[in-house]
Amino acid sequence: MKEKVERFEDLIAWQKARAFVAAVYKPTRRRPFARDFAFCNQITKAALSVPSNIAEGFERDRLKEFHQFLSIAKSSCAEVRSQLYSAYDLEYISDAELQLLLRQGEETARVIGGLRSAIERELLRTQDSGLRTQDSKCSSKT
Image (cartoon, rainbow, N blue to C red; front, side, top):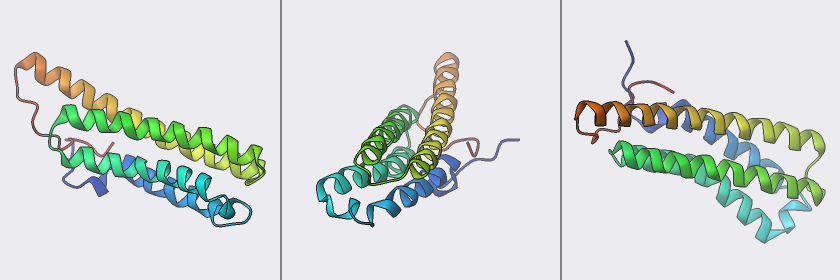
């Protein structure tokens, strides 16, 4: 039997996104990265967008909106990964840091994508059965 998730904090996707934010922030606190205010602001805002969109979508209580916010969160993961390459090119992070952060970002995006697919299947199921799609409380901890 699948457990119903009542809080966004219980979603594995949100938990991974939260950890990804912390990992992205670490190198932005070191020089010379920390002195590039515009870039630091951009990459940290994009990283913060990931768990924020998961939480906001979950709280909307509509599957269709949750699906949309998960798409935005997954896209923000890609934005951060792209910016990580720039951080590497500018010698703000090492190759080892780049690889670690890219793997973490890819894993976060994969889990978000899995949750998004589960929500999409639920949307299709409820449309097919004529059920209302109002309740976004997930039926698994994906």
